[in-house]
Image (cartoon, rainbow, N blue to C red; front, side, top):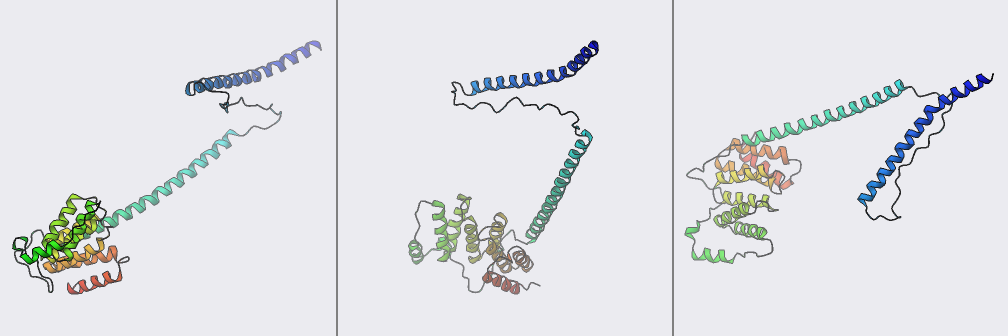
Length: 291
């Protein structure tokens, strides 16, 4: 009987020894981590005081095992994790397919827009003789400037503010408004080339195209107006540029190109343009005999 008790105690002690060794091992690792953390703190914060907070790492309190407490099923846990991962993969795949579809729609719309713009027949060389549109008189060349013209030109005020780009643009527009078209072309082209990042660059290019158009140069005007739309499709004067591109091509004699320009206007700006501009486009289509 005495031997049986001794044997039972030995067996019980043998079962507890591994648990005690595991607890000692975990405690030792946590103690080592705390020491290493304090060493890092001393290096990062030399001369630290007692105000420095203690590390949040503490040796975990391991509750004593409850005899008879069933362990979790590792196969069930693994299956649950795999199911969660599969659900995430399906969700990400669906989002990726939606994004790819939207991207294809944007690319298709851009391709159609580029094709329509390239199809517009913009002449490369100005014809030797141009017929002026009714009511539009070509301004005389700078070399033939009369004394009266010089006086009128000098009367146009040149703005001088802290914004040289805006001064250049404003003066060019004033020249256009006064129908000094050759001088306006020179001034506005200088603005466009010297200040490409100007906040009103869309307007500067637009009025340059208008100055060329009113000066009896529809071919050159078409190039400038098409470039303005191409470079700044969302610019403040982009819709007007497309409309006057159609007008310039009509005056040049390219009704087909004009109709394509008006169609581009309706496709891109038809829903947002002002009623006045849309009415002008409708009249332009009628003048060009667009179908």
